[in-house]
Image (tube, rainbow, N blue to C red; front, side, top):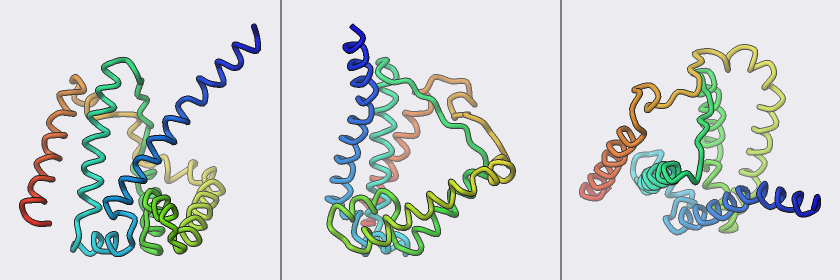
Length: 189
């Protein structure tokens, strides 16, 4: 009896990880198919010459947003927004920005580029992720005493802030993103 319960708990514990891996592989495949793992495409986005990456990300945001709130309404998932602060956003943005500026990849596109066999992503990207993560972990106790607490706003969401049903925010935001995507396409961007 104990073994069955333990085995069931192990399967239940690993299930979200398996789903996460599956969705990650699909997302990486789609990034690669969309061209977002190519250095030239990423640099083109940064230079505001090629909007492929922005279109892929906005499409992912609208798809993910609609999907996650549909799953929430169906009772398949529960959402636990992470609390935040202005300090957390500044430090996270700086770490992300430095890595992006040095190599031309973000963490998602590094994984996709490694999957494509790009050596710069494998050597520089993986090393950068490990170094950045290690530095942050080492500095976290000190950062958490000061700058990470600056401008703390908790686990607030727009829905909580406005005290409205999720869909009152989600649907207009989804429509706005879709209109932006249509505008990009019509403008030839």
